[in-house]
Image 1 (cartoon, rainbow, N blue to C red):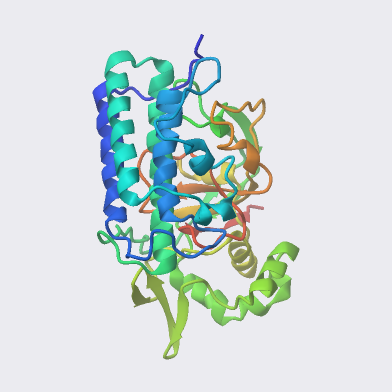
Image 2: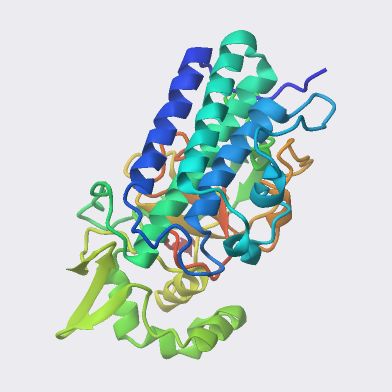
Length: 387
């Protein structure tokens, strides 16, 4: 008997159309890769795009076509597919040296998998298949955002101008009395990930929180005050990271005249008061918050703030002060490596950036990164304790 998983209320044809629309978005990025970009540089925060494209297709086939009710896998359409594209089994650093398919061969594999999934959805869209089709679409959307991160990191030309969301003109703070906050989701919430299960209450003392994330120009004040050189502002782990990397200003910044410029993909711009600070890691965010006499919000504080009009979010993935950890009674879903391996080593983020798809950009979604990561579209806001 197949387990029951929460899914969104979509018809089989809507699921087929959604998978196709997501693939078209990936295709737009594929078509912009430079000739030497299919493998790209070896780095811990990158994947070779040629591997990543094959992995995305493999993931869809693995869950929508091969997964059996007893937990076994049917054979793949591709010989030795698991040896190349299973991210749980293939070490990250080995992915550049694998016998990968060419782009045109991955195109053929993708066409076969998409056609087979569409036929199966039309023929037998039970709860399990609906769940796996939705999981596959969201998985691909996350990889698409990772491709945007890589395009920014490597300075590649874009298929289109990324959307921009201006911060509110007036920076304010919102005050909240002590309260209980419901974290997690109910079974009727549509598709959710295992780390969102299940709803439970946590007590939050009184606090105030910035109505908008910290801007580029606000962060520049911290940099100009030699915040990167003040040991007292940094945690022990943060100071170790800063010293190890000789960081004295944010990633993608450079001096220009008497001020700073920031690189957005292929173009350099002056800093802006209405643009959220991006590409800071948790250590940098914590140090700036400390310099301001404040701290990062907890996930519960951030979520409680979304209940009030005027709380501006969606400009960045926002660091919280919480470690990414399981909710009470956590059990992994069939894709066991989505959350479970990353608990306690990663930090929790909330919100979403302008490049995040709307199906992921929701209040309860829990993102997670290692605290030293600077390449994602990450920012922050600050909190003070009300007295």
